Image (spheres, rainbow, N blue to C red):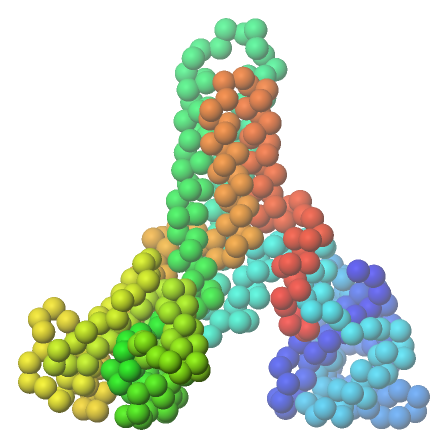
Length: 427
C-alpha cells in the first residue's frame, strides 16, 4: 500500500467531481499542478496546469498526515464535472507518478493507519449501498450499537482471561470456591450475550440484503395483476391466456423502509409444454428460497397452491370484485377496484418488519461478523465444559482471537480483501 493513489470520491454526472489523492508525495504532486498549496483544511481556488497546458480551475483542500481520512497526506481537487476535465487531470497525475486507486483502497489505508476498524468500514459500505430508510438506520445506528457491543464483549473477555490466568498461576493457593463459580458465571453470561446476537443475525442480514417475497398460485389467479398493482406500474404482462408468465418477473418495493424484491412466477400446473414446465420449476425453486410466499387463488372457490416447507405463507384471495362471498379468515383483494389492496400492503409491511426485527440486539448484518461471533461463542461453550484451568484458558484465548477478528484488531489478508473489495473505487 505504498505510493500515491487517486480516484473520484463523488458519483459521475454531477457539476463537480472531487478527486482525492492520498499517500506520501501527494502534496508535491498536487503542487506540481497547482503551484503553492493553501493552508491545511482551507479550500482555495487554483488554476491547474501541466506542461504549459491549462487543465481546469479547481478548489484545492489539503489534509496533511495524520489528520486525514486515510491517515496519510491527502489532497482533494474539486474539479468541474465534465469527463474531459477528469480525463485530463488523471493523465497528468499518472505522468507525475500517481496511480488510480483500487476499489476500497482509501478505506483500506484508513484501516491500516488506525483510522477505521473493520466494523466501521463495513458500516460505511452498507451506508453507501443503503436504498431504504431502514437500511440507512441499520448501517448508521446499528453499526454504532455493534461497535459498542463488540468493545463490551472484548472487555468482558479480557476480565475473564485475567481471572483465569490467576487460577493458573496460583494453583496451590486455597482460593475460595466462589472464585471459580464467579468465573464460570461470567463466561456463561458472555456466551449467552453472543448467542442472543447470533439469533438476531439472520434478520439483520435480511434487512441488509433485502427480502424476497414470491407470488405463487395456479394460472389465471391474478398473480401478474397483483404484482403490477403492488408495484404501481406494469411490470408483468397480463393476459387471460393460461401460461403467459414463463419466467420469474420481479420488482423492488420499499415497504415502510424495508427493501423487498417482489416476484411473479409461472402458474403452477401440470403441462406438456417444455418452456412452461421450466417456468413452473423455477417458480417452485424461487418459492423455496423466499422469505415470504404470497399464495394466491381466485374467488369464489379458491384452491391455494401447495407451498414448500419453511417459509411463512400469506394466503390471498384475488378477483374479489367478481364475487359476493369471501371465505372467512382470508385476505381478499381486487386489483381492479383497489378493494383490500391497502390492507394487503400494510400486512406485507408488517411481515417485512417481523422478518427483519433484531429485537434490540447489536446487528450482526454480515456473514463475516456472524462467523466471528459464532467462533467466540463456541469456544466459550467448550471452555465451560473443561475443568482444567490451562485447557480452559486456551479456549478463552481462542474466543479472544475470534472477537479480535470481528473488529480487525488482528487481521488476515483474506479477511481484509473480502471486506474492502466490495467498495466502490472512490472509497
